[in-house]
Length: 125
Image (tube, rainbow, N blue to C red; front, side, top):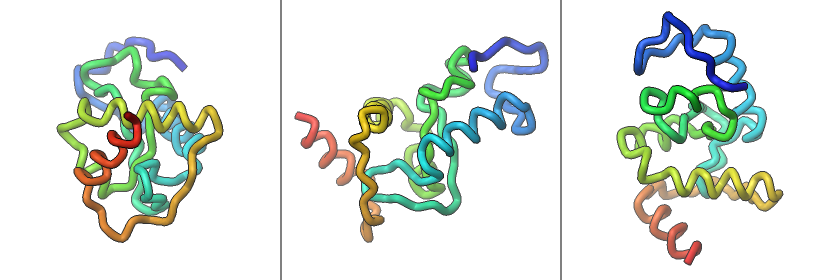
């Protein structure tokens, strides 16, 4: 579904009851198997549906399935405010999903975001 400008949207505002927004969240969750997509996490609890490109800055992408990824609360909170640093990682995860390469690993006992990001970046080179 493509975002259509509505008079009641202000930049940055969200209406969580908007049928289009509800549908977007449902579709992202379903595509991601109702599981956090952070590498080696796999949590199914306290899920958040994250906009890869920021909601306020990219209104035309608000309801695009390819602009969303499922994260658990912990990982969502850790990347908040640093979204641009994680865009490449999230788009790579989504690309691997479409190619059927996503592996669901056991949750990591250590949740060191920086170390996991560096490891992922090293694997990409």
